[in-house]
Image (cartoon, rainbow over all chains, first blue to last red; front, side, top):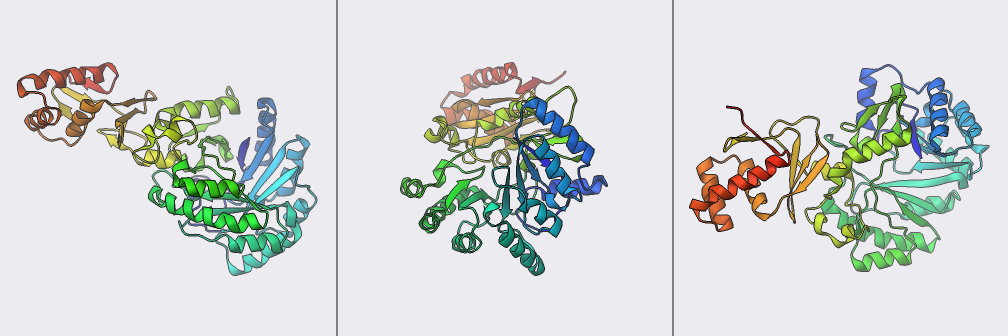
Length: 323
Length: 91
């Protein structure tokens, strides 16, 4: 799996956005707003050679790319599965492109708590009506107390896929995006257990994104979640971000520290391996002081949480660089 | 930061964990969990109190008489040197 960051711009303004800091910096440094078609072609060939079959299109807002329909056609010609991360404010041209694709070829993950304007909400509604069961709802927990009933209702009203891809608002290292604090995780875990009853009743499955930790759920909450078909995973494993101008990132959250200029001598999998080696010493710890001795972590049931959150706990000694 | 003729190496990061102080050597991509007495000494050194106070405090905390404590300190620092966490100061 690899992420192609095809657009450096976005038409939403989410406080929790992982990409905002990196993309704003890029916008100040370069003029290239979109990945060129030639670059995309080059990376598709590279992904072919590396045996990567899943391509995820991100931004910014990837559908703002002026050649978006051609990009989809091109990736499909490489027989790859496509996942599009979007805020749902789609142009007619993009909508028509996506209407013609079946869910087994392309997944559309729509950020349901994107901060968009009133007129954009109407455009997004059109997207939901027309794409319907092609859409997977994405939701980012930004507050430990949250409600999924509105989302459940939207899934039912628009006949969206009965899945919620649930993320946690996580920090960008050294930046100030809106993120949950680890101390808020247990409250969020409890709230999720409560909310899972609502989604379960409607046959909606909740799938967690990265950053979840096992101890954010009490034993009681965890068994409730299991009963409600919550597919718990705790991971912090990079899906490489391939950006315009040949920059490769570990992930947006660590974009200030772990990035590489693409080197022809290395394949995508080698670059990923290199990132994993460089981040390995930090993974020994976790987001809490107790993580190193935690039985969940020792047994491999918990990764210790988001690496950006882990690294934020550390203090530099003397003269240090990078972090 | 100088102490007992040594200084910390570059690109080190540390955190207080339940099991003790964890140090990451970012340059060499290694991490170390310091033992109990090492963790105490590390915290004292990081807080940059003067050498005499470090010796006195360390002696009290780990219950080793003051006439033996310098040997203990230097053996810990020597271990850190072997792992590249500290360097001997020149001159």
